Image (cartoon, rainbow, N blue to C red):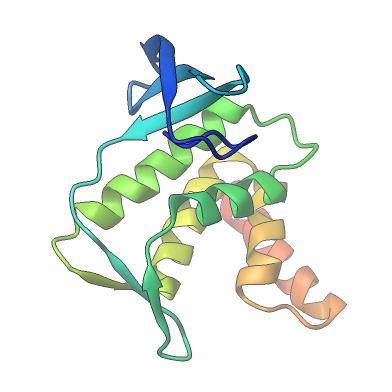
Length: 153
């Protein structure tokens, strides 16, 4: 594993353990050149998935992009990193077990929104505002009222 500090190619594993949700292995490593310590995560990848964007551009599925978006939506909301990790792992599992080699970014966005709806209403609205490209305050009002109505029933 390449050291993120000095780019040396060799590092030594000092500790390995499963993550709390058992979806990855966390490894503490130490660079053999500069001695710096860093953490890596090893996850199972069932197959290579290509994400088809709305403009028909294609790119490899990237778990980190989903994790970053969800983390941003959940910022200052009291949602734990473990809850975010579980949501992202659930989305990744859905994508990988869909049986398809390509998946629309819209479908991934809907999976994330379903997870956020159950996790935190404010984070759900935040994510939706970017995902659905809200342009006016009225867009927020309409969406928030639909969320409020869904919670009442």
